[in-house]
Length: 266
Image 1 (cartoon, rainbow, N blue to C red):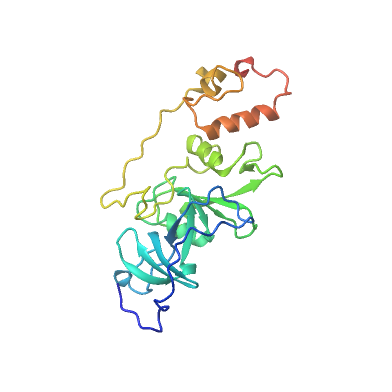
Image 2: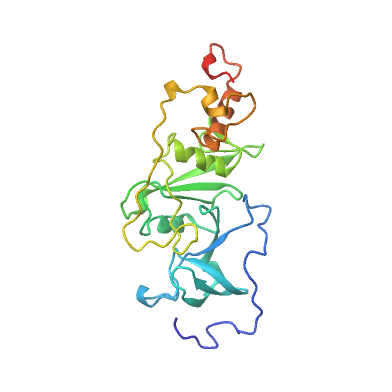
């Protein structure tokens, strides 16, 4: 940790205020008040070897002193004062608050992120809306990150494609983790956070992704997805909750169509 003069950092007499006591504002679409803090920039700026904090590291906030925070990197244990706007809050490992499109691209192009790595962020052009950012190749180029606007209906449901809606962002992510449905890639692991309890720091080669076998939809019927009893979801279903909700939504919108297959009746 580099040395600091009294002019370069806030006074140490301020009482420590642990981050996490502040609830998200109503204008921000969030589904949980539990989050972690991630560094968006190297700090201090300059040669990477001289940085106490690096972009993409999880931070423990030791004290909140307004525009400056004293933090400790969960990845390295380094402590430093940094500007509070050099950080972002992350919910569910993939939902970012205070993240620009450019910075999303930089984070997704960091090491250990692979094809399908993703995050959800607030839209810069439409307040209250969200965007899905997905890494579509292993190239270290911003063009290898694709962005999708997540629209919201009056009833609060979300969608990327108008024909496929979801009750919340988690269901949307679950669905596109199972089926690409027009995206550049299936959603894989959330954007890598160094030092996160949920994503251990990797010192060797990136771990190999393991996926469930592809389902043969021709052999599927409603009981294998929703359960044998009407109106009851099957916790042991072969598909995710997000995909079940998407199928329900599609069936609801097309329930009046003529000639629909009776195989899907539940």
